[in-house]
Amino acid sequence: MKKTEVISKELAESKRRKTRRELIFKGITYAFLVLFGITMILPFLWMISTSLKEPQAVYAFPPKWIPDPVVWASYLKVWKVVPFARFYLNSILVALAVTLGQVFTSAFAAYAFSRLTFPGRDKIFFSYLATMMIPGSVTLVPVYILMVHFRWIDSYKALIIPAIFTAYGTFMLRQFFMGIPRDLEDAARIDGCSLFGIFWKIILPLSKPILATLTTFTFMASWNNFMWPLLVTESVEKKTLPIGLAYFQEVYQYTQPDWSLLMAGSLLVTIPVILVFVFNQRFFVEGIKLSGIKG
Image 1 (cartoon, rainbow, N blue to C red):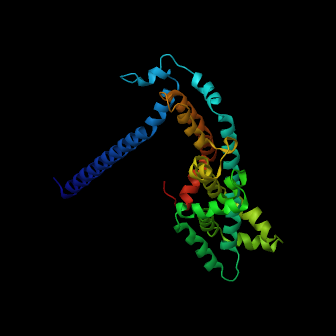
Image 2 (image 1 turned 90 degrees about the vertical axis):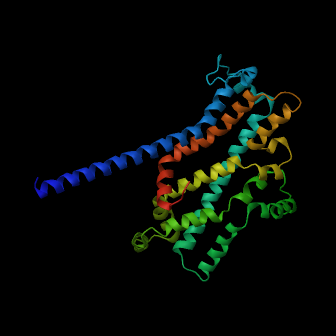
Image 3 (image 1 turned 120 degrees about the vertical axis):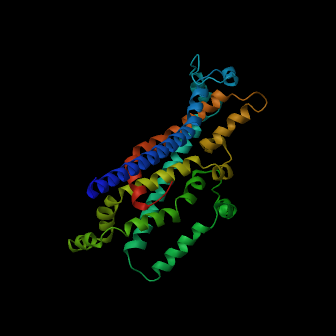
């Protein structure tokens, strides 16, 4: 056998080994991702299954994934046992107001810190950024005392206003704004565009992915917030959904919990978050890639 034929045969064998290793690696990766995905979605599927069962069927053994019969009564009952509609309305109002407020204030602050020049800009920014190092539980009591002095306890102002400023959102938007070419800004300025015009017509339209990312994160955090609404609300009319779910347990504290009812309520609570994510998904994924945020 000639030397060139031997070399060609060795190269072909090496290529086959490399292809085999890549296939094995891909197979293990996909298997891990499928397993991880199943473990993530199983509790959600069990929640749906439980919400459609009769109360006594929840404790059946072995458990059944597909209810027989399928009962929709829990989805109607959940609105009557507690003032669920009021909690829902409060959560939507608070989450939308906080989300709009955070995106609005973060965008303006990020624009000032990234595109404008003024004395002490970087020092002010890093001082603002340092507030991210302070745990939220540390500021809980001082902010609560502030709300008491303002006489905002048990009001929408206490639920919304302290949450509309965020150093995290400002930092995230600033990093994105700094990547926008200054040539676009200079061209707009030559055409007579004002500072606000550049912000409104140039910066914001180019920042849709990162704005969608901040919107999704903020809405989810505000929607799921439990501690702050628990502290600053007293009347049932001002409670939000996370606290409302706890009311179901109080209703059945002396009897066996109605898990079908609780799961139906929990599923209804997750719907707005899913809708926001689906609506922002395209921009959200792009924003994650551009900003380098993990998770």
